Amino acid sequence: MAIVRKNILNVKPYVAGKPIEETKRQLGLKEVVKLASNENPLGASPKALAAIKKNLSGINRYPDSQGWYLKKRLARFLNVGPLELVLGNGSDELIDIIIKTFVEDEENIITADTTFLEYEIIASVLGREIIKVPLKYFKYDLEAIKKNITKKTKLIFISNPNNPTGTYVTKYELQDFIKGLPEDLILVLDEAYDTFIDVDDFPNSLALIRNKNVIALKTFSKAYGLAGLRIGYAVARTEFTAFMERARQPFNVNLLAQQAAIAALDDKRFLKKTRKIILEGKSYLYDNLHKMGISYVPSVANFILIDVGRDCLAVFKDMLKFGVIVRDMQQYGLKNFIRVTIGTKKENERFIKVLKKVLR
Image (cartoon, rainbow, N blue to C red; front, side):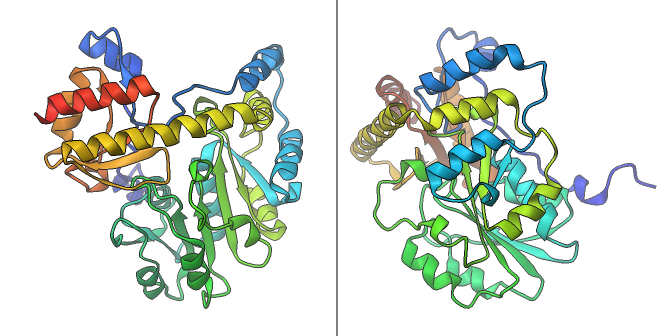
């Protein structure tokens, strides 16, 4: 008798971006720039930090299991009902909750072959079949996805904008895609990077949730700078969220995360500053990559997928020696690509300087 479930043996664990302190210790470096995990280069909202300090003395108590105050604030912010929200320990846990809630053992899930790795990892851990459809010009191929739908298909995950490519599905493409989908199929739109959008044709997922089988996922990890607190949320109509609440663990979102998220929503100045630095940094990186003759995938997120034209793992290791952490795309099957998070002006300049050294 095997000790471990069979499907666990086939799971390829998620490889996270290399931590700053570990890099300093291993390579004996005093200064390290991390541009690997799509974090906010400005840190966290000052209002969120103040809320954390204010609530530190209460960490001996369990948090509000329902997250009532955060849901109330989010409901007002999004113009939805509090019961249309489910809080999660980051988007990762919400993906887990959704699959546990809706997908039977014999049913399958469809997504892209180059997208957020956790869709496949969590599905595999839970023993659900996942069908991966190749991207088309680095974008989700919605037509091909539709052709792969069978009677066994229950969920479709679309990362929009897509991680790691930075591309997006337009509102017109999504409208066409939704037409004719089976009535019992659920579409999950993972919008972790929607706060950085600077295009006019991005879909309004919240306009779909009440009359379509659509679940939108959003997070405080990126633009709001709360990645270390692990907090995200799902928006869906109440008959979906009521069942998801049954699969959610009690106290899954901690006290400090809830309070920080409430405060972060009120910090419009910080969000505006974050968007400004990302958009300016993106323009700077585009210009310099053009000058260097390096190809990249135009992005609507806070990262850029770059074709370095050689083994990405070697480039990653060489850049690490100079104290710049980027993300090699080997685990995604993009062997000549790296992904770089847009940082501060100083960080972006250092990235370009080191990239020139390494590729030279």
